[in-house]
Length: 56
Ligand SMILES: [Zn+2]
Image: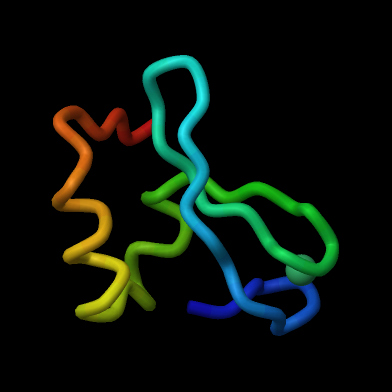
């Protein structure tokens, strides 16, 4: 998945009970629903490993 700001790779970060995507380059954070249109299989299976995903 790619950052909408700079195009770098996003990684999954977990904070305070919610799961977000963080850009490895510009450190911008995205809620899952902001990037759900570009969810790929790899990311989806990684997210499936979390017991609770809060879409906020
Ligand atoms: Zn970025």
